[in-house]
Image (cartoon, rainbow, N blue to C red; front, side):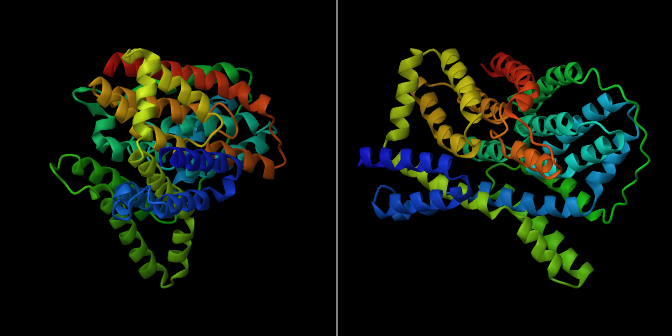
Length: 422
C-alpha cells in the first residue's frame, strides 16, 4: 500500500510539472485514485480538505475583482507617480506600492493592476519597461508572505498551523512574519536602488484615474478589520475566516446587482475567481491527506531528522534553502501543501514548537519563486504582459534583477526568523 501511494504521489508531481495547464485536473484525478484504491478512506475525504482556506481564497479573489474594477488601485498609482522626481524613484515607488497591495491581495492580481502603469510611464519616457515590471513582480511575491491573506501559501499555513491574522504581526509577544518581510523588503529595495541607479530621467505625469466606486475599497478594509477582530474570538468555528471573506463577497455582489440591475457584472466577478487554483488546492489537500494516511509523511519527517542529526537549526536551514531552490522551478502551492504536514511531523518527533519551521518554509517557498521567470505565477503574468507589448525577456535578464533581490530578502528572513523564533 505504501509503495503504491509513493508511486502515485511521485507520478502526480511529475505530471504537475510537465502539464501546468492541467494541474487542477491532475490533482483531482490523483485524489480520486487514492480514494478508489482505498488508501484514503471515503469517510475522511471531506475532512481532508481545508474548507476555511478554500473559502478564504474564493472570497478574497471575488473582492479583489470588484476592487480592480473600481479603478482605486490605478488612482493610487497615479498619486504615487506624481510624487516621484525621476524614473528610478518611480520604479521603486511602484514596486513598493505593489508590495503593499500584495500583502492583502493576490500577487497575480497585484501585477495585473500595477504593471500597466509602469508600461505607460515607460512608453512616455521611451525607456524599456522590462526592469520596472520585473521589480513589480518580485516585490509583490515578497510581500505575499507578510499577512494571512497575502498569498495562497500564507492562507494554507494559517489554516494548517491555526494562525490568525494578528499572528503574522505579533506571535507570542514577538514580532511576526510581517516585520520579517518588511526587513527583507528594506534590504531588497537597497538592491533595486543599486540596479536602477542610472535611471535618472525626470518624470512628469498629471494622469488622474477616476474611481468608479468606493464600496469595494470598503470591502477590502472591512475584510482586514473583521479578520483581525475574529482573531480575538476564542474557540471559534474552523471556517470563521472563510465565512468572513465569502460573506463580504456576497454583500459586494448583491450591491453590484442592485446598482447595475443586471447579472452580467456579477457573472464577471465569478469568472474572475480562479476556480482552477481552488480545484488544484482541493485535490492537493486530499492527495497529501492520502500519503499521510499511508505513513509516508511520517517517513519523510524521520528522514529529515536523521539527516540533520536532531539539530533544529540544521533542519530549519535545510527546509528554508531547499524551499528557495525548489520553488524557483516548481509551483509553491503543491510544494507547501506537501511540506506543511512534514514540518508538523518533524516538530512532533523532536518535541519542538513547529512555528519556526513553518515560517522558514513560508519564507523559502514564497521568496524562492522570485529566482526565475517560471517560479511564481506573478512572474509568469508579468512576462506575459511584456510579451504582449513586444518584449521577450531572457532568463538571464530576469535573473540579473531577481537573484540579488531574492538573496537579499531571503537571507534577511533566514536570519530574523531564527533570531525571533528559533
